Image 1 (tube, rainbow, N blue to C red):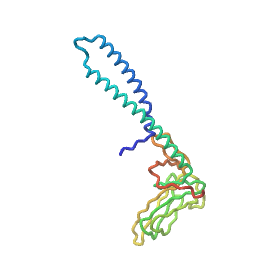
Image 2: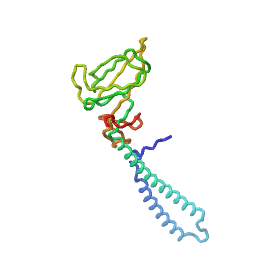
Image 3: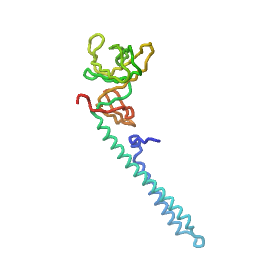
Length: 222
């Protein structure tokens, strides 16, 4: 199934109007030539009705196609407007997306993570935008989904500045086997970017596509 992006299709709007003007000019030229031909045709060898009818049918088919394009352009505009309205509704919502980079905002950042089995020992490491570890903690981790909240406190006791931070989690079971861990990012939608072919939600400095969203909810402090 081919997905039609109304925003990328907006760049092609207006072609139906141009095509309509072109077919009108060509049709006027056709009628002028036809009238001239009828005036000067040989009465003993008149123009065949089938040829005349065929040309008219061709022009009619082209005109109908242009009208369909015109209606399609209107539908694209309505679809884009409807998408914009829906996206604005995400502003202020808390969304969950796959990933490991979250925004520390006012001393708060959080990640969802899922451990494929009970871990006797797990290590959580938070790194800044340069990949430098700023916070590390360890301990057992239950099987299944959990949420890790970070208050911005670093290993040296200072408070990390707001910005993007990346989490990494390693876990092993009681036999020393490494367990698979997946992470999800939680954030508040604070903007929408319409400048590209496809609109994206903004969570701090991160751009999130609609198909990346796993869940949407009202903020916990609302």
